[in-house]
Amino acid sequence: MRVRDVHHSYRRRVVLRGISIELQPGVLAGIVGENGAGKSTLLKILSGELRPDRGTVHHGGRIGYCPQEVVLNDSLTVRQHLEFFKTAFGLADLRRAEEIMETLNFAAYLDERAGVLSGGTRQKLNLTLALMHDPQVLLLDEPYQGFDWDTYQRFWELATKLRDAGRSVLTVSHLAHDAERLDELWQLREGVLDAHTGTSE
Amino acid sequence: MRQQLTWFATATRCALIEHARNRFAMVLVALFLPAWVSLIHLAIPHAPVPFRLAATGELLTPHGNELTQISGALNAVCMITGFMMFAAAFASGRFDRRLAMAGYPRTHLALAKLAALALISIGVVAYATAAIWAWTPPRQPLLVATALFSAAMTYGALGVTFGSLLNKEVEGMFAIMMISVVDIVLQNPLISSGADSPFVPYLPVYGAVQAATAGAFSTSTPLRGLGIQLAWFTAVAAIALVAFHRRTRNALPPTATAELPGPPPQSRSRSG
Image (cartoon, rainbow over all chains, first blue to last red; front, side):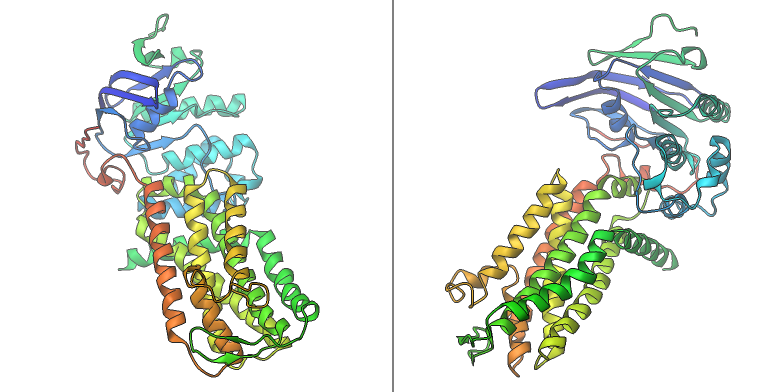
């Protein structure tokens, strides 16, 4: 994924002032920044949800985007979500989705409606929908919100496995405590992306 | 072809499941509709209301309560389908977008909403026609049902439009309720002395009111009324489609997300 000179503002409030990123296959990268720094805006632009005021985004393949705010249909069960997205992605089966569900430990909720699931379980489904088509570029916006410690660890194992399989993973967080798990870490401050100081890499 | 059918069938099934989970709407249909039609029949005076039906030029003199029953049923089916479609469109706005960005064809998502609306309208209208029939058998029940159906479809499309454009749930509910009240009340000769004013033919369900009234109290069939209603439905549905399209659009080229797994990566670009 190649991003060149992306600018964006909401009316007069300038959020991004020239973001450039080069994300190679097999890289696990992170972006940190304070609340309101523009992290989610950047990820929305990278995923295609938002058109930037200026700049270009090049993608090398399938994108998987896990939005910060859980995007589900509360009336549908977990299984119905998987079937719906299986049709959307044109998948032959749900093997991969089932593997992710096993890893994240929520396969037992298959026939529960999304509306009655706990916050953490909803987030697990939110993440599964982003990963079930084996995307080459993963854009994850605070993907572990509401996860318990065990699931949090499993999430990182999953992300590392995807990186090792040659996928590009870009995760966004407002904290830098996962720095040691990342190959690259940037900080978004005042609309500009800098190498994060104090990264263990 | 099979793929097209799978897209359409899956989306329609999910749309219907979503509507079926709207318990409040189900209660409205089951209880409010017959209660409303019955209350009108019992509470509104029986005195005849002579008026000239614009669509056919006939002078009709139905009982006030029977005339208002038709208005009441129209009002109820419009509010129910409008409310159901609004609630679904409002709740699933971001979800539809996510599906579209995952590669779900938007045409099939939109067609599925339309199919769900048509199925709901058929059910609600059949029930409403039966409720009217229980008190006053219409002269042409099929025409009454067709008129109610065309009105229900129009308000359903209006619901999708508001669901895609408005930011607050209460705004959409209020908008649908107010529009439908103004629309129906102004057209009832019993309530509004302006029912034959030059402004009335431009109301959203004018065509359906003309056709339903003829169906209930006359033997003529005002095709023009149904035609006007069809034009209203087409116009509102087109606006709904544009609103839906805008809400679910992808800023990246469509091919970037519609790929199937497996093909070798290709470079895709976009200039912002």
